[in-house]
Image 1 (cartoon, helix red, strand yellow):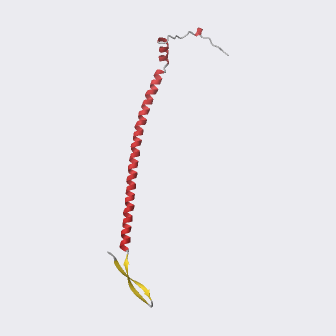
Image 2: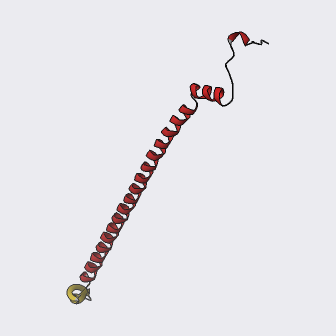
Length: 113
């Protein structure tokens, strides 16, 4: 629905009123559509960011669990290395399985260059 507005126009020696179609409605509807599109874009961006942040948080939690598991495994392996490398265990294996003995101090000869 368009409206007409009378505007004064100079014509010859006098002023004449002419009717001109008012375009205000079109500009208003264009402005509303622009605002709606801008708001929709903003909301879409906000939702996308929220989804991205949630995805990264899930990845972070999974990595933290994996890190804790790896650290626990590492501690178990360190304890096992300590146990296997103990002097008493090595001495026992050397005596029982390999038949090795400790030499008395007097049988040890030091060679100097």
